[in-house]
Amino acid sequence: MTRLARDHWQRRIAALDPETEYAEIARMLSAHEFPWDTLQALSFALFRTYAVPSIGDLLHDTGEFTKRVQKRYDDTGLLLEQILEHGLPSAPGTAAVRRINQMHGHYPISNDDFRYVLSTFVVVPVRWIAEHGYRPLTDHEQRALTNYYRHLGRHMAIKDIPETYREFERLLDDYEAAHFSYSAKARRVADATLDLMTTFPPNRYAPAAVAKRFAYALMDDALLDAFDYRRPRRWERRVARTALRARARFLARRPAREQPLYVRDMGYYRTYPQGFEVGDLGTFPAEGSAQIR
Image (cartoon, rainbow, N blue to C red; front, side, top):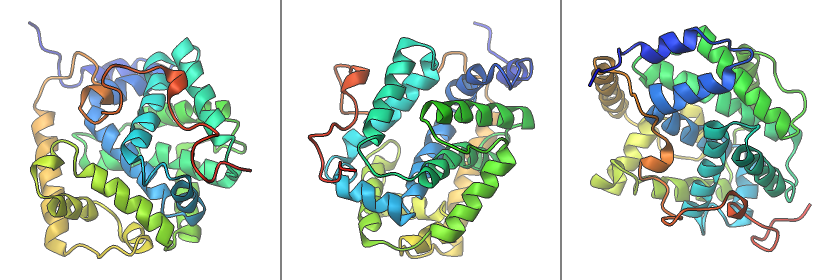
């Protein structure tokens, strides 16, 4: 069997137009070039949003991220993956966006918070891959991801969406500087999420305390301080980053992935072993305690 050259998908992506073929580029990046990195980056992106009390407190009050954290993790990931894999014009993609909008419609979420969450989806993967991936994303790829999430944001009725990656980056940095602060409720959401993280492969093969320290070592000080987590020692950060750099060097010498790899194939989603219907994912008005406007 012929192996794909390491730069196979990068060359394929370079031949596509980031202004019109951004959905295909996003799929190639997420399912072929950087499947594990994209998963980790988006997980950390969502984790960052808890440090904004208006978001973290609301998530706590629904009970979804403390009492049913595995289900909530699975539902969020599966809905986003349906859109990525099938595209917004498809029946699964349309159903997933509809389900997301129905859920959000039950909560008093500001447009500013929506814009910030969207900015984490754009910026955090670019930064994660630049630091931990086997290569950084090109400007061409950054533009495609920006357009992909701008398109998704419009379908979520988010207003005043930034035009460029740099504008998203400024939005994220400015919003975090203004809004990151400690909240006991948000801390409980963060703790529940980290507890879940320790059960995922390969973390589950290490003591939970070690897996958490590894995660702390990958967080910036502003995020740690917002949750009142102890800052890692210098050697802990060095160990974590060295491990990820070694992984990146190994991948750089490997052939490109021929078959797509989605998160549902990685053993992280465990709520629906027999399959799922998009319309059944997520929360519904009768559930939770904060679903009022």
